Figure: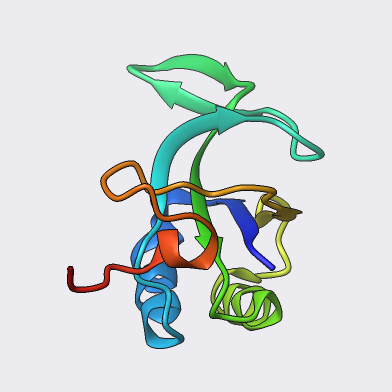
Amino acid sequence: MISKVTIITRREKFDELKEALHAIGITGMTITLVEGSGVQKASIRYYRGVKEEIRLMPKIKIEMIVSAVPVQDIIDTSLKVLQTGEMGDGKIFVSEELRVVKIRTGDEGAAALVDAEE
């Protein structure tokens, strides 16, 4: 089965998470800087003495498509790195991918996720 794992979390945790994921065999991922809100409400900060309410929190979204590395290993590794017990730690979403096609070669399925010598 091919799965898509999406992790939305604090930006400052990315480097540590990336190293931990590489250690379990995750070699490819897509990163997007995002802003959002969930249960965590706005925070207050002061900029040049002016009170400012931040309603959308800066986050990072990490997406990866996997077949060889078990999804539970990714979840367990991510929780070890990201879980602080504080509001705003983030979420992990897992979904099944119905079809994956490598554009360069036309390979499909798990073969599309690896770089084989041609």
